Length: 170
Image (cartoon, rainbow, N blue to C red; front, side, top):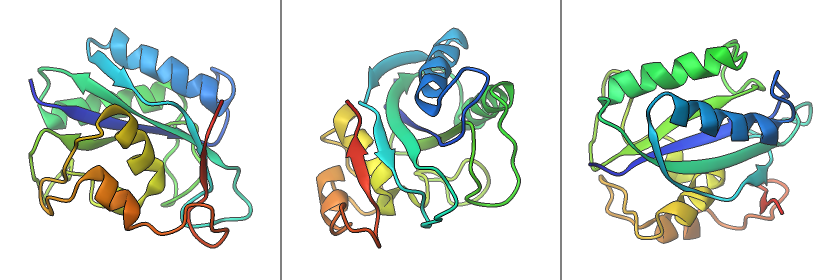
């Protein structure tokens, strides 16, 4: 089976509790949907991107999964889980109770339709790359060939208040 990576994020509470509790419950819901959870990153806390003073920080992580579902069917399943968790889609980058994105589906490259693979903005987002490194330290971007370590190095300072602040949660 192909290596599939899903990014999880939340910065609003849900019926499952805090953002971190919501993400824990979401991992359980993904497994209950018949998707095998192979590895999990630790949880990270990150500033909203783009930076928005009126939004709470996010909790983010990445899971490595296995499934027989095609990318389109996997995306549909993830969106059903988001809805079950109270996700409301309003404007881009709005606060959310749950966000589930397919980061990469093996070495597939899909540039039209949904889902776009690999995720088109993942390589510039610390809140995806750091947890991805936890579960797949040897991963390489299928288009650029850059390793996850190279992509992280290209982000610049991760403690910069004007950039992408991120820190692991205990």
